[in-house]
Image (cartoon, rainbow over all chains, first blue to last red; front, side, top):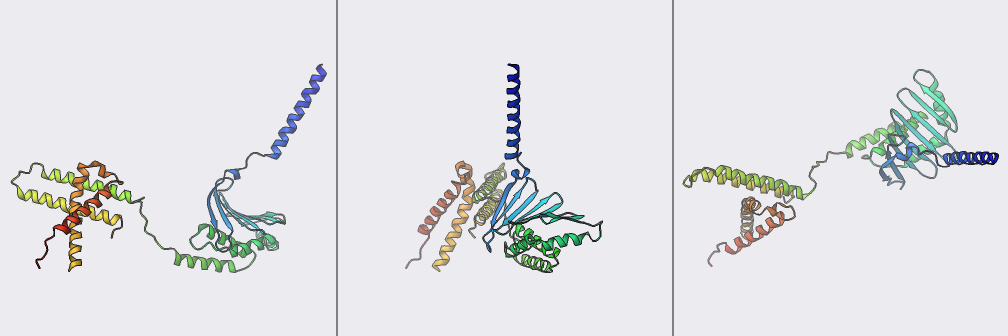
Length: 255
Length: 61
């Protein structure tokens, strides 16, 4: 009996262990990426592709775009800018921070740093060999989110960086053109904290009531025969009331 | 001449409404509601304008 109990216990323990392991493999602990919150979904007018901007999760900010040939993820993680390129046959991650540039993926691993001279050549060689980089450059060149889009600027900067790293000078020129078009397109637009015409009426009401209160204060203690004081109080009231109502008409755009 | 007269009457209407509205707001607190007040002001303006149009002295022909 005891032996049977021991065997059963062992079997149950084994089942539990296997179940736990299987569960852990099948549905791992939610990665930080799951916490990412989408803040913007843009449709690129030139290609019709969706550009997704998320915050939180594993990256502070993440911009994703892709088509059938390549998927591009641009992430800002702390002080590191990470670019992930995924094609059906290749994956490549390029991480750049203030001191180092690291490339890793299916083609291999290389790291360049300011301390090691000549290390940049290995990184560039890897990038030049990568088909994913070429596909990404091609796709990013087709996008046109316009000069007002921060996501568009980030993706254009990514293209410029990739072009520069493979020794193509077009990236810098394109970025210069984008800056010039942005300077022409971006203009100051007056904005107001007002939320609707109801605010105009609320503000006008306050001023109108204050005008009436001022008239009452002004007329306090004025004798009935003091025509001059009454005239002055009335004139002040009229001016303030007309001014308030003019402001209201201006506020609701009856100009 | 007729158009100028209408403009003058509109201006007088606006002045009368402007001067009257604070009194209305004090004695009819419901008018402080943005859903009510502007409509009340407009109604007042229409009435004043109509009175002005009808009561304006005409030249004898």
